[in-house]
Length: 250
Image 1 (cartoon, rainbow, N blue to C red):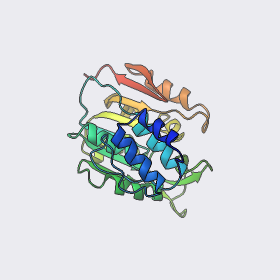
Image 2: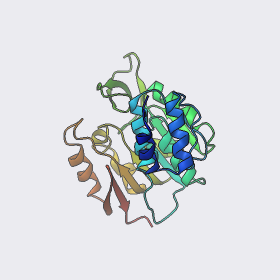
Image 3: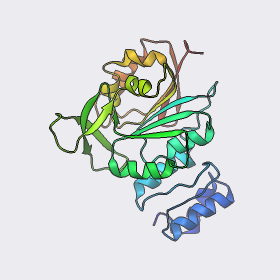
């Protein structure tokens, strides 16, 4: 059980209204984490009984990690590293006119993602990964929980592979010539994504929100900055994320 005392309820109140905080507290107190309702999301969501889902809930819906001020309203959003769907649900609530494509490699995470996003008609989910090209990948469990999986390429004959797409592929799949918002929390895969083929999508991206993972894969930051510095992006820090704005796309 995540919470065991009213002190934890008071911590929830730092981020939520009284009724929302009580709803979450009661759900966790009774160990019934299905159909949780808070005003930050249009539709209810569910969590599993593990600390990793709670961490995602805390990051996305308590700390508002993706409530990032923009100088425009996005209509096309790619959510790379969709996890259990809370970020996509947040985007769908905040930007109801946007079309959102969310991608998650882990099958169990993806099953909950589909459940948590099924009521949003503007969200499409893909069970796969973001990469620098179409490929077959295998998931590597780093032993840090369901929000810490990474991926690597495998042969087509390998078992239990997942499909991967480049961001350019995903834009084409959605019939987009550009993308208003690309969010990436991909546990080190940003190194591959920004090593090759970034020319086909990065200059067509209005805003990039990315969390870097040098602790998982060496030189992630170096690789990302080397690619972004070839274009006219400004940058600001938003919690654990970096927000890059393409100044050539207004």
